[in-house]
Length: 275
Image 1 (spheres, rainbow, N blue to C red):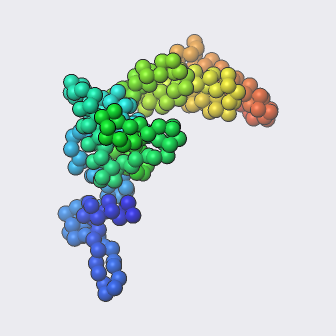
Image 2: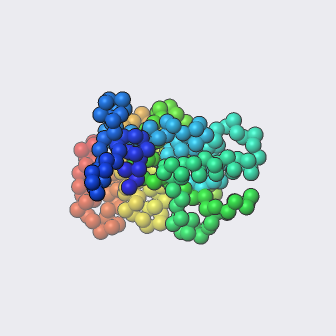
């Protein structure tokens, strides 16, 4: 239904009534070449975003970079309206953001994520008495990807860095719980050294808590990034080979703890290939 609604809104299809049947066909704009038919759903979302007002567009793009559900407090902390609105008081910023969020929900880009609010045992009621839950997420992966890819890499990089700074500031006391999230944004911003540092911290934290499978995945991600940027990996050792061997040894040891000596043996053989 969302697909058909979007196609209708973009004037790409139309209904034709044939006796008692309703037939869908391409609109005259498509047939005459006035409008180019998009090849994928993300292109449709790009078109929809292009027609947004600037404030709603800024908020939608910020949420697409966050990549998960968001609430009002987080959007305010991230300056989702732009730094030019910092002179507004909290209530004015809340009201402006709510207008943008309502607009994005109305046109089918965002939905209120009730399950998240329930799961966190919080309704996140506004202090100004409007009384709405403030957890929002995208209606589809295509919606998120279309908005995310409508930005230049430079713009995405700036927002990823802003989100990293938010997590590092907001979660100083329990930063280890957010290392994976920070690593995701660091990698997206192509800050590979920072991403590997966060992933290694997250792997060690998982290892300490005996979550060996998660630790293996994180060490594996460290290796993947080290292969992308060997220079960045030198932060962890005198040569890229030594760094890879260290992480491969950790992975092999974790497989042994999981009772999988065969996989540990294969990992060590790979380590010898590196040598």
